[in-house]
Length: 426
Image: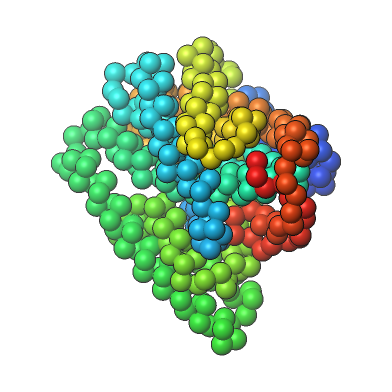
């Protein structure tokens, strides 16, 4: 319990100076990765239960399930349809191209014989995380259209990556074990069951809660707890009947948002906050369990090169291709390409891959190595540059853009907070 005690104290200290640290471009993931890494390097025995693979796997899985459901259930379908061009381009063109580019570089740089390892690494590292670049979303001089596109992308691409990660991890496990089912049959069955559970749980709870809300049969507290229960039920229910819990949580959130029609958006905030709090623990586990061994052992030049390429070419070229024909400035295309930080979803994926492969007695080092370095460099690079580059970009477009009033939509699905002058053409 010593490790948990230390991390609890770290959280309180961080909370006391969070606003000041934000001004210095020091993010919460930086703080908790540093704390976890310090424990892993100098007092690994203090990690205690946080070094147990099964416990780590359960914490990571539940955290991601909450975040997937919350992100999807606060999605504003009307807003996406109205401004759908940019986020849809990023999701439907940029995301697949990022996976393909990551796969190509992985075949070259990751020292393995099977293609599935390169595909798994590419899928794990394709999702982005808005939380690592908050300076982009809090700086009102950054065009609102650009902020919203990046925000919607980061809220949805982790759900899109989940089936791919599941698929390629199943390929690796099937190749290294003597299971009776083929990986194709198992993966398809898991995804199909997950979709059914998502429709039943997300659709059922969304309709019932929305109806109870309209009739004043429920309370605000009960609604918040019911949303949390819906997220957990989507995940756990799917796993119980042999489905993929992450796909069920994400798809369940999408169905929940569609059937409730935004009536329960405020009730989702509790689930979001709980997922955020749990994410700090996941960041610390990432530091202690994955970063510390990388720093304490030999450093692989190939892994670092992959990480650098993942944060630049592998992300920026597909984004540029997806934005062809939009008329956006070169500075905007570069800005959107750079701010694709790899965050919590990638951490959870790599933790799950690590524990799963180790449990099956398979080699996990190559994929864990490249993923760990990519996420670590992203935490530092994107966290430190979010504020300064947002200010630079906002100033660059300020004199050239047409100004008009727009509602600040905030994070995906959040309640509009203020009316501001926004330069939205990018």
